[in-house]
Image (cartoon, rainbow, N blue to C red):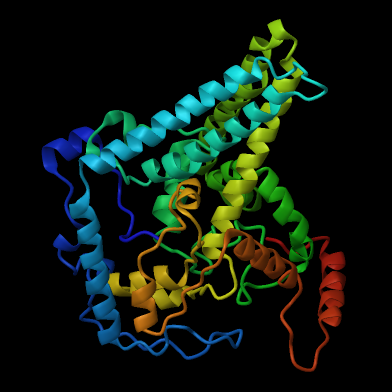
Length: 424
């Protein structure tokens, strides 16, 4: 969860000359989400959703929501005001550690083919170190830098407008889909594509079709190839395939340009991991083992990153929202939606670092005081609950008087007639 709606990234030069304005300093009439209150009387949230599940925030009064917004604005200000040399030293230390770890691991992999008593110690140590280095770069560094978390330092080397991460998805496309769309419309059905990434049904209020019968398989495949899935997702490949015939020539040209950017980025990543470093290991006869080490490190990074992210928005107890519920949404209501739409991972300080501090939240007391569910648990517990949910929601919702297998059978007959699984 973030403490403020995402805004356009400000370059170091802009920040130096103009300063970053606090969003709430702008007139609230421009955008209701910039204020914790609203002059417009909004209808209260219904007690129950379409699926029959209760809305966790239905009991909150407008005064409650305003008070939550004021309190979180104060917390945000406290965090922003506390930033300083200690924080700058921390991120620079993390970046240096990650780079030394990667370089050291790649140096070890030059000898990954050498056996000692039937074991290749350099392969194991190098692969483990490279896996951790890639996770650190993606989670604690790349994700947070591209969020603009460190823009206040005005360091062009650690700035959201300049950082390119070790991932298949170009940073510019990721920032658009993640910062501008996901965090603006967190868990809003039909607006937040991160909710299941377009291939998973993770909420009872999402419409079911035959495509989702296979989602336990998609889920595993998505985890293993997560960086490529995210690249396709950021590119909006699925939307392009579904609407290509209705697109204008300008829209098609924009997609082709973005697709070329993705392909070029994947080529650079693949060349580095699967060509350059294996070739460098040829002198010690370690090309093949260096290649396998890079493959394994990327798989480990993909599975870890996927696991952390699904624990943030998919576990049981996480709320989703209808599109109509955010019309005229205030900043206070936006805060409440972020709170209810996000989960926590409990763990040690090392866990916080390896999860990009997505496991480190400061709002539990606030949620308990307002009787809002705080979803938390260990990484293993949260991930297992998500997988069970993926399996359970691969089937249609239970309907009184109807068997689910009959619903599936009827859907299969319709799909056979239309020659479609009903995905789009």
